[in-house]
Length: 111
Length: 115
Image (cartoon, rainbow over the protein chains, first blue to last red):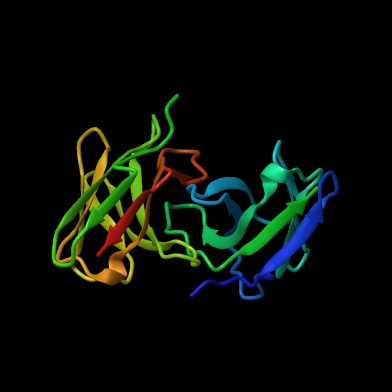
């Protein structure tokens, strides 16, 4: 079973920040938080991952709470192309462990 | 740099038949994982291959088998197809070398329909 809980769906206006929450209250000390997204009928795309510090890359920012029980993926300026299902996954990153996907959050960006 | 490629794109088979799906990993990657994604669900892990051996397996019956070749490409075989095997089959590759953070890169998938 997935170790994360995410809202089923969210809406966001184009150009605004999209903040996608994820709860992972049973996360272990050596587990990372990974985010993937899946645009309709395509394979999942890696976005970002982190352990306990906030992370930023060219796609998004990841904010992890101090107790590591939840996190937020931030798309700073959402575009229509960001419409997708977003998956939050926890896993140990020191080996190539399998990814356990939940049902994710369906983000709809509207004009 | 080519990403993960899969073939064929679409496939239609009849119940009881056998099917082989193929995957070429991203350049420089040595590990291949296979996932099954039913409509409206998240991908489910089938198994993972590294150094031509199955290293991990999800909760799938023995009808699902695989192979990895010396060039790191991989095949997924499904025997005695059932209607419930209709799904998008995804291949993901990663690299196990020193310093890797093990992100998995996914291919576009093969859509299998069993009639």
